Amino acid sequence: MSPEWLTAIGTLGTFVVIAASAIAALMQLRHMRRGNQIAAFDNIRRTMESADFRNALNFVWNDLPARLDQKTLDDIREHGLRGDMDAVRLVANMAESLGLFVRSGMVDANIACELWASVVARSWDRIVRVTAAIRTVDEGIWINFEYMAALSKHYIDSGAGRDYPAGVPRLPLN
Image (tube, rainbow, N blue to C red; front, side, top):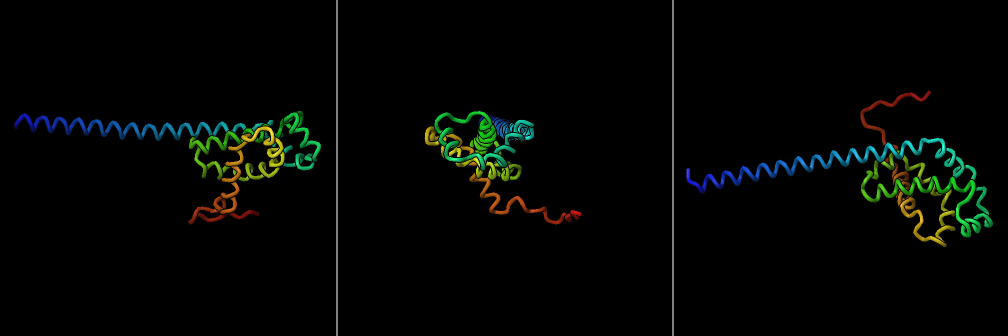
């Protein structure tokens, strides 16, 4: 075998090793991304299941709409969220974080919507007037919450979360 052939075979072997290493690195990155996504989902889930968050969500969904008269909205514009209105901040900031994770690609949008679309959409509907009041002072507040709410409403309207796996029998509800 001539030296040129040996060089060519050596070069090809080097290429194969480098290509295999690159493929292995890409697979490792994919696994790391999934691991990060699982950690993010677990953190969000733990927060949403906490007593503080559930109490805040109960306030936002049940008490807030009746409390939002013009005087309260003016007070929010002037002084921000104070007292029991701090519950609004807790719910909105959680949805803001979720929206940021989805927007940045750290968390899969479809999975996030499958799990939390109804919570985010309903919370947005209750908090939107507060958001409008605060945006007269800080126009960028809760934009990722708004983004997540838009995705959530589209997800709900499309009926995507209501599809039951084909071929699996339904169970009786009585």
